[in-house]
Length: 120
Image (tube, rainbow, N blue to C red):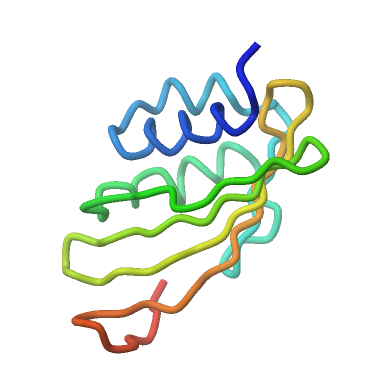
């Protein structure tokens, strides 16, 4: 059995490479996604709102990952194609090996080493 941290790493890699089938297979049918822009949206809304945005990223790098009580916390850094960079934290909740929910906590955006206001 693969550890949950390995599963989360595989989701980030699938997001980076555009392999939507990996993520679709991982999500529970009652999956929810929450961020400062989204309040517990379902899997269909997640793919409509969040999946297309993956084309905006030049890189996605997992910096730290920790499993606690069956949940996985991950800190990652993204660089966008327009030169912005930011770090976010996510909480991944599981039911067995299926991803039940993700909560995203946004970090500051920087461009050329200087704070840049975030836009949706």
